Image (cartoon, rainbow, N blue to C red; front, side, top):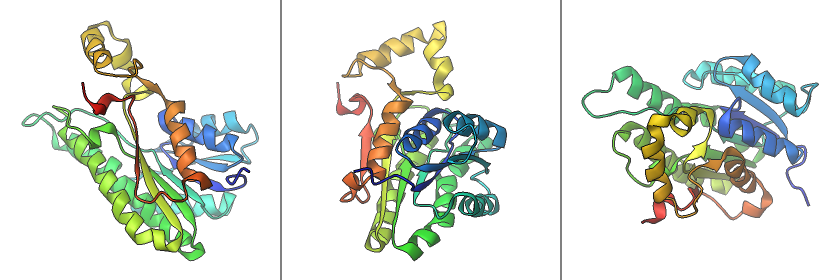
Length: 256
């Protein structure tokens, strides 16, 4: 039995990468999806129209998750257009190096503002309607970098570790109200964000190193792989899961 059919989902970061894959995977389950891009509604429209050319069951929106007012406006627009939000998937995020002593404050602030505060801003805007209906699913995107350190990426690791603990704390708060809050922690996943790493000749040594320590032999998962985990957490099959972090990293963090 498909328990997701006719639900309404809001997916931030939905115009590319994991967010676009999640939008497609949920739509394939009969979910009406709000594809939210960070700045350009045209980018969101390209994803939504590919799912539904008439943009009725998949609709485009844009909001900078760093701006609480813009987020509230987007949430209101989604509700007016598609109905109350049953599912929230927070995929908006950025990944940049932050070596100690040489990182510009704008770089670290951007990661904190989008990855951590942005996730919170959207949850803060959507949670009241889920509380009122005593139902809902919230899935946050963390990272394998929340579970192990990566030299030169301290700020990114910190923001994603924050997502894991935010998820657990929210589960304690919202589970009694019938709201499931969980997260997915992808490992290396092939997205536009890391295309240069995967394709540039000068990165071959790094790729060889990554391949050598990935037990599954798949150095990069596909965005569709991660989307499958998100769909599971949104489904009735995951009703017993509250505050969990689903690690999907091809065994990367398991050890050598």
